[in-house]
Structures are given as structure tokens and as C-alpha cells.
Amino acid sequence: MLNIPTQSFPAPSSQQRVSPSGQSGRNKVALKPGHSLMDWIRFSKSGKDLTGLRGRLIEVTQEELQKHNTREDCWTCIRGMVYNVTPYMDYHPGGEEELMKAAGIDGTDLFDQVHRWVNYESMLKECLVGRMATKITTSGLYLCFLFFFSAIIPPPPPTDPAHSTSVTLPPDKDSRPRYDWFQTDGTVHLVVYAKRKIPSSGCTVVDLVAGVLRLEVLLGKMSYMLHLRLADEVETHISVHTASSVGKIQVSIRKQAKGKWPSLGEPLEFHNTFLRKKDRAVYYRDCVLLSKTEVNHNTYVFRLQVPHGTVMHVPVGKHVYLKTFIQGTEVVRPYTPVDQNLAGASNHCSQVSDLYLMIKVYPDGIFTQHLNNLHVGDHISVSGPEGTFSIRPLCDVTHLYLLAAGTGFTPMARVIRLAVQEMDTIRETKLLFFNRREEDILWRGELDELAANNGRFQLEYVLSEPCESWTGRRGRVDESMLQDFLNKPDASKCFVCVCGPPAFTELTMGLLKQQGFSDKELHAFQS
Image (cartoon, helix red, strand yellow):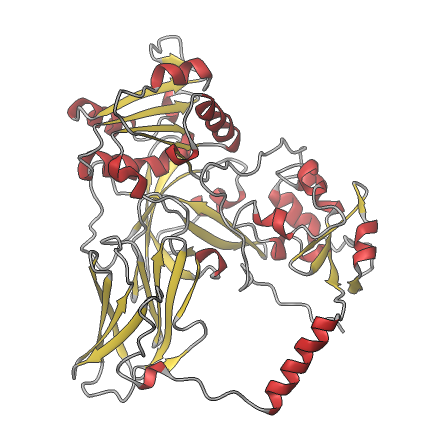
């Protein structure tokens, strides 16, 4: 009998990730009528045999997989599981050509280049053929021997860091973070030493649920995690204090009953681990919708409240994933938080931070229609910060150029505030904002006011379908428009951020490189 894994998102070993800087991700194709995501969900749950195996699950050899490599008979393997993706061809937003790249082969690496939030296990559940057969090799027999040997002679018991008030220091050359803890009668304090400079906020996410503490410190591409069941009951209020220059983070929690603890608690899975962020499973917390504010005719700001016991600030340029179940299928989408308004900075001193998400509601958008139908007080799952953007390259930039199309403006909003309010080295920030019509322009009043009152911020709108009275730029992004908008003054250091639909991003990034901008001078946000 096959041991088929239960549905999860993402798998603990998942390496799904957002496209790196400078890559725009997949191109989308125009789907036939009746082939939307909701149509696929309905079709996959219709009871039809989508595998051709009448409900059987089989072990698939490499030779068998290679036989199914045509448009009419297409199997692919993702993380050891084989799927018949033939029925999904006409429903795939990336088109038939992209699926065929993985026909008859292991498509895990190709899949990993798409997006971290794609939940193939749920989407292709009814297309599951079975598991790839494994070959026992000489090295495999050796590993089996080692496993058997270790079962007979167990290793020495691991050191339990929670039973000591101090963790053994790693070697001096070890760059791994470490932690320590101390207590008073009424409080317990946990201290993380990152061993590097860290941002003043945004790198630490703390979740305290039913006595279980999960603390994640984001250090560039790496993630340091502490995961403990605390020794006794505590209050849900948590305070986090960061000493950025020395890389020290202190988390303080109040005890419910005064007294000394004999230990900090019981270590849980992935406690005291230092991994690449992309190898860490996405963690969701249950957030509450506080309000929905109209921005224009089809876009709203959704204000979400994180749970009591959670401290989370999303850094500039990072996004979060929203997750929900629609007709029994898990659907996940990424969104970039904005501040409450363009001029107001986030309150970094606050230990509880609401999330403001500016989201366009599409008439045929399965996820955005679900969001639009939520009422105040309803719940939705939200991940921690994700994304590759770093403000470090901006520290010595003199000229910052932002190219946004539609809701691709959302990551730019906080970048603009950061540039004009906190980074004096940036002498000029320019936004070229593409939309179809005037009524589509997001936060136009606030953008116009900022441009009028701040000499370091310049703004131009471009409309593809303007009315006759429109006097601004018209058309779509092209080489001459960018040549006119961008300039590289002598002795300047420039940086360009791009965000919009995949086709816009791909075209714009190509044009920028043709004009001599290097990869180090460019960043493409996921849209």
C-alpha cells in the first residue's frame, strides 16, 4: 500500500519560492471561457476519472514516467509524487507550453521557479497517479545499514537547552545565532544574539498560542527559529526590544503566576534551527478583518488584526500570503502591505501592528471576490513576511526610480515613504505610474499632495485609455518613454524598482537592461 502524504501547504521540505530579483515569473495566457480556477475546482470534484487509473494509485518507474510525455498523455513528478496533468492543460494560467516543459520528467525544479504560494498538492489532488518507485543502490543499502545500526545502538541523549539558563556558546567562528534566557518572579525574558547588525524592526516575528512560543528571526536569506512549549502559563502580551547595532533581540513575557521556573520549557520541532528561509515551511496565524475602506471603484484597503500573542511587522518591500479554503480547495495569494496612508509612517514602537492590504477586486477573481464578501469580524489566515527585497542597496543610492502598473503600486507606497522621510542620501525619487484610466489611479490625491510639498519626489502618470481631456502621458511602456523618464546624472548612483503584471514587468526589465542598468541596480517585485 502506498503511503500517500496528507495534504499540506507547503510541504515541510518545500522549496517553492518567489521569483528572485529581476525575474518576472510566469507569463499568463488567455484561458478559454469556462476554464477559470473555479471551473477547475468544480471539474476536479465532479467525480470524473482524471488519472485514467479508475482510482488506483501505483508506483511509477522512471521508464514508465518517460512514456507519458505528450499533450494528450502528460504525466509529471513533483517531490516524488506523479500527477497526470493532461486534464489540467486548458486550465493552467501559464499555458500548455509551460506544463509541457515537465512532461514525462521530474518537474520539481521547474515548479520551484514559479511561485512559493502555488499549492499543487491541493490543486492536483484528483490527478495523483502515485509515488515514484525508488531504486535500491549500493549507497542505499549502506544507508539502510547505518539506520539499522543506529537503531541498535542509540545515540547519546541530546542536550536539552530548555533545562539550562544558558545555551552553550558555539565556536567563535560560527556565525549561527544563539539564545539565552533569564527570569524574575513575574517575567521571563528570552534573548537572541544574531551576531550581525539587524533592522530596528521587522526581522522578528513572535507567535504565542496556548503556551507554545514560536519566535522567528529573519536574517537576509536565513531564518533562525526558537520553538518551545513554555514551562508554565503566561500572559499573551509580548514585548520585543531590538538593539540593531549589536544584533540583540529581547522578548519579554509576563508570567500568570509569580515564581521561579526550573526550565524555560520543552523544545518542539525545529527549535534552535538556522535554515534558509525558503526551506522553512510557511506559518500562518488567524487574523481578523477590522475594516474595509474604498480606495477607488474596484480597490479597497483591508485592515487585518493579528492575534493577541503575535508581534509582527512586515518590512518595507516584503509581502504576506493570505490563505483560505474555497469549495474545499486551499487557495493562497500574495499581497504587499501598505501603511495606513502614504505620508504616515508605521508605528514601529507598537508591539501590535495591524496589516493594511490594498487589494483590487476582480469580477472573475475567485480569491478577491471571497475577500470582498468577508464581513468585519471574519477571519483569514496570514503568513509572516516573505520576499527578496532588501533596503540595503538603497543606503548609498542618490536617484531612485519606481515603475508601477496598476496594483503594482502597492510595494512602491512604503518605498516612497522610506525614501522621502528616512533616507536623506536619496536626492530624487521618481514614480512613473501606469494605469488604464484616470479613475484607476490609486491614492492619486495623496501622491499629488506629496509631489507638491516635497521637492525630492516627482510623479508622472501614464494612461493607456485616457479620456479626451487628459493632458498627461499616454500609451504603454516603451524604450523612448523610459529614456525620457530616466537619467543618470554624473557621480550619481541609481536604483530602479518595477512592479506590475508579469508581461509589464518582463518587458520593462528587458528595456532597462538595454539602457545599461545592471542586475544590481534593478529589483522586480512579485505581482
